[in-house]
Length: 259
Image (cartoon, rainbow, N blue to C red; front, side, top):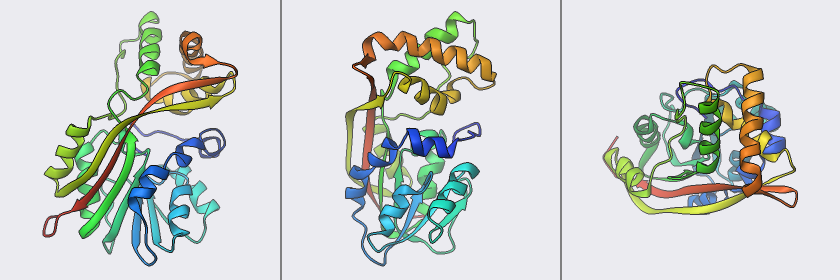
């Protein structure tokens, strides 16, 4: 996972509190349809759960992620798999892959063209891409609440957007420009449950720091709590939060002779 600023992850906390991220990777996994013996790259692999699931299908899997914390956790959990700690946009394999898989990672890569080009260059001609990530309108309620909080506190960086949430047309055109043929693409809503009264606060603590670069720990704690309170009336009911996820699901094939 990557964006313009280095994000330091609590990888163990991510596994404990944000396990839904990997569970929701099943749609992209179905479009990937891994086969025994195929070489597959998990692009932005996080703590490795989906790489391990792909390996269970008999594929030879490698993962790449910029976060040392995530890669350390992945290597501890799955010592038989190969994980690379590197910027996925600039890392290149010694041998190209049959497929690239990515779940909940591409929206962290603000250089979307660089990421798309890297995926193309990691694939053999005819190789396929299956990916899911945040699409246009993802978590807009959270972003709005955080911006209201920051404005109230006089922060000059109101409106900072740390994520890349494209439309179907925007991302399909980008993939085509770097040598992919898009076979399937869809933008869909996925209301996502966060358990417990502190569910939104835990989400903000894990992901929201990207919205307030340079903030102190005490500022983050205060502003996250205020933002969660703004959201509570509408999004918290009967012991759980429902957060507005909108996801982009992509299946594409690298055209022969390009990249």
